Length: 137
Image (tube, rainbow, N blue to C red; front, side, top):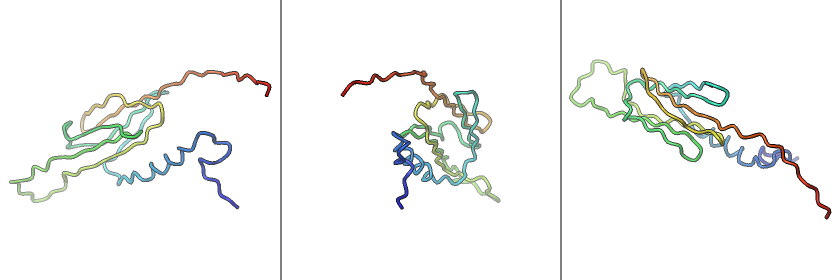
């Protein structure tokens, strides 16, 4: 018996890249830092919020690479000359990736009270009914 892959099922024409998308999403390998929320703010808009306490705007970079939203954080370790009795707040770098569907655009990003907000909007395609003429062969 032959097992059909998701992208090769006969009823899913044009969805070949869906399987690649699922594989790419599984490979992001995020370790849970920093924690984040994803909320739907309207029918066609979303907001990703990351907890980035201790990061300044200049420590963060937001890019769209190959249909993925990539958020990177890198703090400068200014511990030189300091003597810590306990160091529980580490200068830790991170990279978070979110795969974007076709038609999803990244809007503005704001940082407020240690939270980074990135707004996304989904373009709404016009619903069009197309009639196909049948020719005699």
